[in-house]
Length: 103
Image (cartoon, rainbow, N blue to C red; front, side):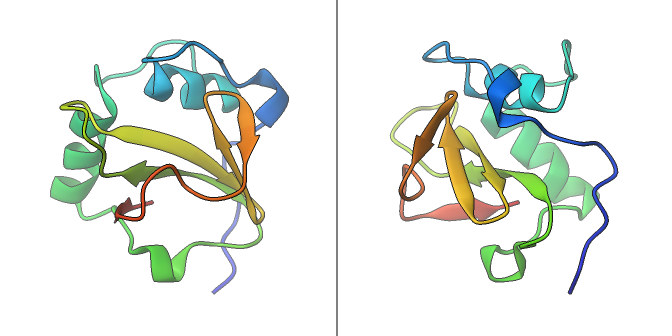
């Protein structure tokens, strides 16, 4: 399914501060202040709202945040942009975790 990018993302604008993954991803979308304090809180809100999608449906034509299960109590979020993964402002070859909550 093709999705329409409503809010453009720019990986070059992504933050790089370790431990601030949600803020780093927000910056890629030009969002300076968010509603939730952590990737886990944001992901749980998406799940509750019914807007958390399985990885099998990740769009290839736009950028989306992807929520990952990690050892951290706050979990982790990365940017997936047209087949390329970004974590804390750096291009990575694969998601930081093999367990993905969704996008």
